[in-house]
Image 1 (cartoon, rainbow, N blue to C red):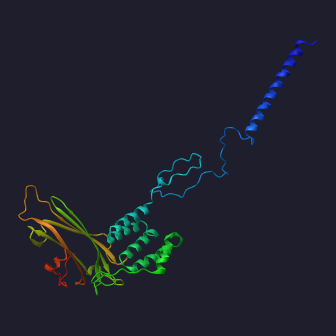
Image 2: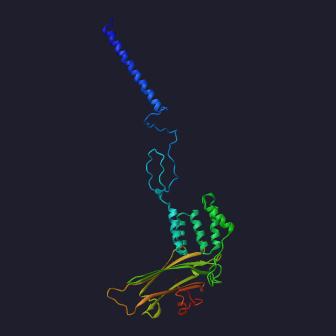
Length: 332
């Protein structure tokens, strides 16, 4: 006869057997559904210093222009290219090329020189100098700059191949302007104008005109800056009939060198800006004559001898021909 304690032991053993069987069935089911034994939910494992992080690295960004990098979330997602700001050099180069696209070569040179002061040894800036000189027809200067690009070696990147091709194939010079030689200067002259740009702003109360001009030295010429005289004269149409030099009492004319020092030693081209501005009349004041801006004549003398002259409109030269030489020094 089975006692109550024996019955209790049998029941307990049966329960334990049933539980063991149930666990075995669960294990079999999991292994069937996941043969490789991988758990249903991944568990984040602590990262060891000896284990490479699974994050793709990007090239370092310029501290001056880079946007803050978002914190990495442990995924393999890369940061979109659009979030990378252009470098300061790229911004400066684009500014210069935008000016060149408008045909303003002297302004381009001035912009590139500003960039080169900040980055004196950058192949991108040197290459833009070369391209600008090439478009100006200054073959020797362009090739000299392309040679500098090649001197950078691997640092020049793709520009090295461009420079090598230019040096190998050469550069076809542009046809000289009418009356000028292959350097774009008047035959026999030491200095001359190149790439004169005019910006006109006519308003209700006054008129403003600015001229930006390159003054180029003949290659190989040693220029004494104190012997250079540049004259910029402006002319008005008075009462819609008479052409007269601008009235100094009613007009303000100022000038500044955009390239300093203006000594023609760096690359033989210096850039000068001249501003013409009519003074607005005082309140309630009315001029006895009506003056409107008509045009300009610019002249450059070296050692008191005329080197070059330009006028807009050209007919101004018929009424105001330039002297071929100066008897005395004329202040700039």
